[in-house]
Amino acid sequence: MFKRKAYEKLLRWKRDYSNGYAALLEGPRRVGKSTIAKHFAEEEYDSSIIIDFANITSDMLAVFDDVANLDLFFLRLQAQTGITLIPGKSVIVFDEVQLVPKVRQAIKYFVADGRYDYIETGSLISIKKNVKGIVIPSEEHRIAIHPMDYEEFCWACDNGRFGVLEQLAALGQPAGNATNRSLMRDFRIYMAVGGMPQAVEAYRRGENFEAIDRVKREIIELYKADFKKIDASGRTSAIFDAIPAQLAAKKNQFRISAATGKRLTTKDEERLFDLIDSKTVLPCYNTTNPGVALSQTKDFGSYKLYLADTGLFVTMMFNSEDGANVDLYQRLLGDSLSADLGYLYENAVAQIIASCGRDLYFHSWRPKGKTHAYEVDFLLADKVKAKIVAIEVKSSGANSHKSIDEFAVKYSNVISRCILFSQKDVSRRGALEMEPLYLAPVIIGGIGRS
Image (cartoon, one colour):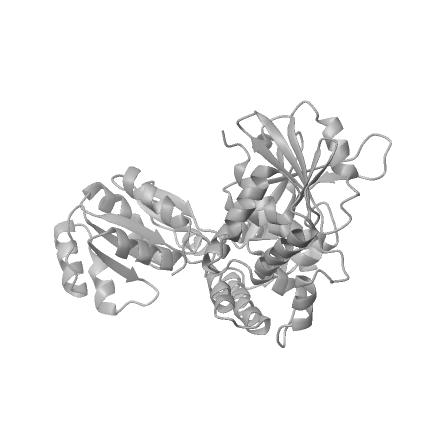
């Protein structure tokens, strides 16, 4: 069982919210929701009943036919499982709750009864499609479960690397060439493996990259099978597949018609939001006026899409159908891939921002009299200073940063920091902070903290 930050979030829910809300763990498939819920139930309660609606007997399912009489319902549940529930000290876990919508509807009454705590897990895309005819409970405390971030990856690998990064970030001094190369290579390993627990487990077991890539491709195929269930046309899958290529093309926004090869329809917008609801992708919206609250000026028609997990992004980018191209992985780890991989590192930073619980925004503009548009990759709100932080990401060529320089001039009155993440060591170019990518989790995680 990997150490996960979601465990602490569940502890806070149990302490502060469990008397009025069930915990709903949200996230993409295979991200570890069920494992976290079961581990928490076993460790933090005197007894627990875990019901997996994806693997349930007809006798157990019949227990849920009538929940109007809760006294009788709980007695039947205990009889079927052989587990004794203790008021105030037991939890019931409804795993894959989207498969039985009437159980999710009953959460309102379970919580109001107050005898036990409740944890739900499920695929949000399926939850959304299985709500017809039921009342969605408002008594749910939502907890986002992301792919393992870099700190969790370091925990899984039993190394203290992340603590070193925190100290380096606090010092704000260059690490030196040899140390920078070593730390950057470690971060590229994380990018190559990704944060899906099955892939991390394969890496920890010492599997080669061909085996790790196979695990990731199986997850990608599982996602596509889910997309097919809600969209038999295949267009949702086509949008998903097109993400790496469209980022590589350096377009300032995602084009659905280019992904599907068809003319854009209103149905495509629904497909896009279904994809976003699946939590497999991260939308990044263009904010038209960074001088005010970012969410209030986002343009829903101008956006980019990133993968929720950079390890899956790497697999899709390499597009290996007959087995992992191990040479490509080795070249990635050695930073010797010939292509400009700025978009790959962009995806890594997008994942870091999302794992910190933040929405993604960028800004694109064309100055008067110019034919070339400028673009800043990411913008973050610094709520402590009531200003914004501008972020640029590059894999190489860190000496070229015209866009963020122009942005700093245009919006000087609302900027608290300008940061360029690359593979280079710490340095400064005037007000521009040059930071290595491996420090991004620490630096981004600290923005806006008092």
